[in-house]
Image (cartoon, rainbow, N blue to C red; front, side, top):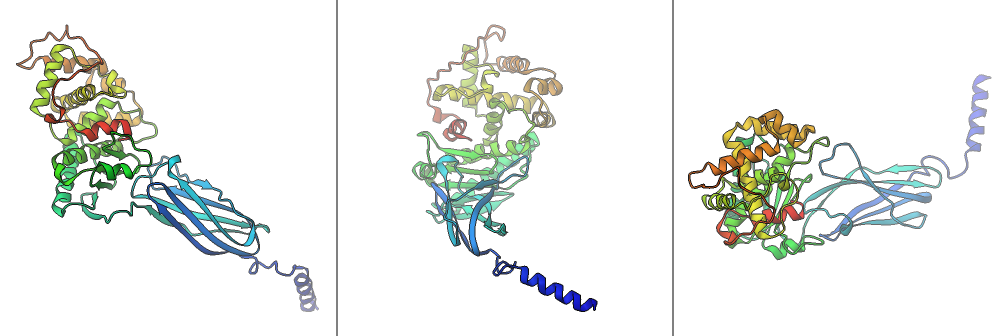
Length: 402
């Protein structure tokens, strides 16, 4: 009797289910998911799906492989007409948020129909490559160089400059490159600028912090400058990996650029002499003023870079590498520059300014009284910058994200 009653109840339940509404019949099926890139202008995401009932909602979710402080994803809503079989696209217009060459994106779709069924597609990956060129690659010690014009020896020299810069910073400051870095070498400024949606006229190279990507325009006949530029931009990414905490203080520009200049190599004698003359003549800025954007003129920029490198190397050479590493760590922990300096060195930013000034005026060729040297922000220069250890790409970096 019990078995017969159960059978009757089962028949009643089957009769109550509407035709065509079973879970199997109402499943949403993904027919296609793809991307199309028009570098550097846009990245298009395409999807095709079907269901036995109209599909009414589609969302694209995506994550960019970039340093973030909490798990997050973005969401886009492509436009489409509800139907049982749909096609939809969403276009990422890079004028509203540019991706550098080689940026990696993970994406997936969430698709729903009018009965409430939902399909979350598997995650897919796409790399926003500059496919206009046939890239080659050389790698060493977490550093990857991509280039398309010039010999393997040319790329090898640039790679060695980057490795040397990494090792110099690790030896002198304790800053370690933990994550891989990807460096794209464009054959000239014109090719580099064409890889940027809205380039500035002076753009020579940039370090995309958070992405660990660098792009620079280096011609094969400008290798010496190129090695300095690669080392400089790598220096920015190395220190960024040390001081990238969301709780960290903003790294003062003189320290950021000073370490990047040191990554190129020790300050040249010609630069030291020119800087010494500027100190004697009172044509130098305070470190506090160099904590914000550098002067826009080439002359002012030269002195700003030279002074930043000299102060940074003063800390490296007259104190231990452990101390400058502690300075970076405390900035990462949220200490102000003044508080970090006092805790480690016993003086604040003004005290460092005075100590460096006394160090500079103690040189044998100096004649100025350090207590009478005046400071200013207008920094004229009457010599050819290319004769000194000055990198145009480094200057461009302060104005263009590097």
